[in-house]
Length: 251
Image (cartoon, rainbow, N blue to C red):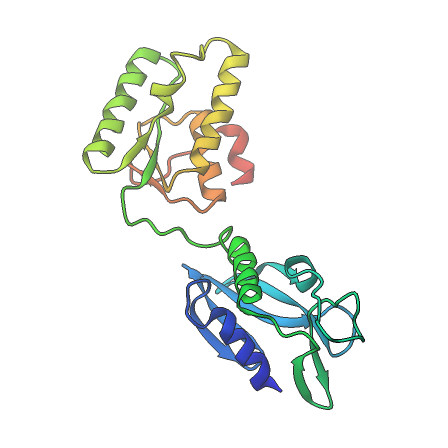
């Protein structure tokens, strides 16, 4: 029976374009998402014994265990299928695998190539949320530097650091050059909006570079956001410095 489930999983994932380096073990397919992330795919029931009506995807971290899981139900992806010349199912039926007397097989309706493609696409859309990005070209690097104090001097300092990143072949994302011309740091509402937008920019970057001997509260917010998302934090200093007083207890 496990041979049948393995055969069906191979039809979905054997070529590795959805799950990298797939391994087929019994009723499960296990592969890589990059880094420490793995995914396990297996057919499961939805409460009716011996009726396998969904594909369960489990995201695993090699050291931390389960990260997330979801069910891709055949009824949601494939819908109800008509079966020509079969009076037993005038309204069609939801595709499912039926195990009877130890033998597994698709019940009445066998998926075609379009059906398998639809299941692969639904799987890929879910896995893309967790997949490690491949960066063959330049990285987007966030310039984390002080702005408060001597604003003009600090903008020039950040510009120089952004230029260094640019000259190294990466893409500098520098809020100092983006927001001060349109958001006055002395106006609390505009300043807060600019800070929140900066944090959103951090989420889109592949690295955060920290510059300067003094790290402001705003810089620490950016550092914490990057660390929470697993984005590498690089600094021109030997240590990550000292967090603001109101954050010491949480670190």
